[in-house]
Structures are given as structure tokens and as C-alpha cells.
Length: 251
Image (cartoon, rainbow, N blue to C red):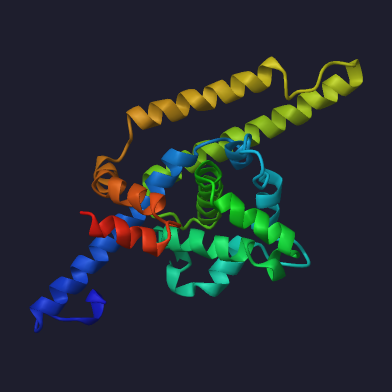
């Protein structure tokens, strides 16, 4: 690390500093990429409609969550890849490896409990539409975990997650209040009410404003620098190596 080096070896010092700065920029760029892909009040909403024959959002979320009898994917990843964390903070530059780790668990019949479920997840990861939705859910869930631990590196990402949680709390609080009134007066449920729609519309307006007017230009420059590289990585993440080599040979 740069802190353990001195300028008696300026080349090594410069390389270490450059590596540290690029790593930080990659982490911030990935966090912003994920919140731009994933911003929603409830991360389950990201998979409200999946292709026929693929795993449902309930199935995916069930394996992300922790249960008393077994840890979920997030916890297993944090335990199994400690080198992807620095002082408890996730280095988001490892997002692709995180998705590979999640796929490995979800397609492991010992983990999910049956060959049928493992095969379903394997087929689902082969579907680009499902894969994008699943990556969004996994990415947002990881960012939420870091937000709760005060371990996000990007102030832009922290701002969006703050909006997420505040709107979620407001929605849940009003839902409970309206639910009590509805129960006592025989009214319709809250989910389809004007109040719920207003809250969701308000969040969409906040998010639209953030996308158009981000508050930290230096972080957005990092994101814009690496956006295409991140997107390309995600597109090619599960492309067979033989296909990649074939494409390279045609260039």
C-alpha cells in the first residue's frame, strides 16, 4: 500500500498511489452505476415481471435473505470473500465477482436444496432479461447492506439510498395508519389507494431530479469514465470463453 512506501522508491510509490486512486474511483463508479440501475422503493419491484420459465422474485429474494437455520447469499459472500471488503466496506469494483458468487450458490443443488431448483436458476441466468433484473436486485441489496452499516463510498449512492429508505418508511407508516382506518370503516386496502400512488410518484420525481442534477460532479466524472467498461463487463459476464475467443479472433 502507498502508506507503507516512501519516496525513496518513487516509482513504487507512484504505482501504489495510482492503484489506490483507481480502485477508489472504480468503487464509486460501480456504486453509482448500481443505484442508477436499481433505484426503487422496494427492491422486489425490480423483478415484478420475469420471463416465463425463469425463477420468480420470491425465489431469488428467499435465497438472498438470512434465516435462522441458514445464512443468505449476502452473508455467505461477505464471509467467503473477505478480500472484497476493506474495513467492512464493500469494494464495489468486485460487483461482477459478486454476481458470479451468487450464481454459483444459486446453481448449487446442495445450497438450494434440489437439482430442479438449481437447474431453474441456471436456465434463468441464461436469460438476459432475467439476469439483468436479478443483478439489479442483488446489487441494490448489497448497497442497502452497506448503507445500513454506514460503509458506502459514494455520496451520490448514499443520497439515493437515503431517499429509498425514507420513502419506504413513509410508505410503511402510512400503510399501517390507513390500514387501521380501512379495517375500522370497511374501506379498500392501502396498496391501491391514492396515497400509495402519491408516494411512489413523489419518489419517481425525486429520483428523476437526482439523475438530472447530481450533487457531486467529481463522483459523476468517475462514473462516466468507467460506465461503458462496467456495462460491457456485465454484458459479457456469462458469455462462454469459447465465444469470447471466437469474437476476438474476428477482430
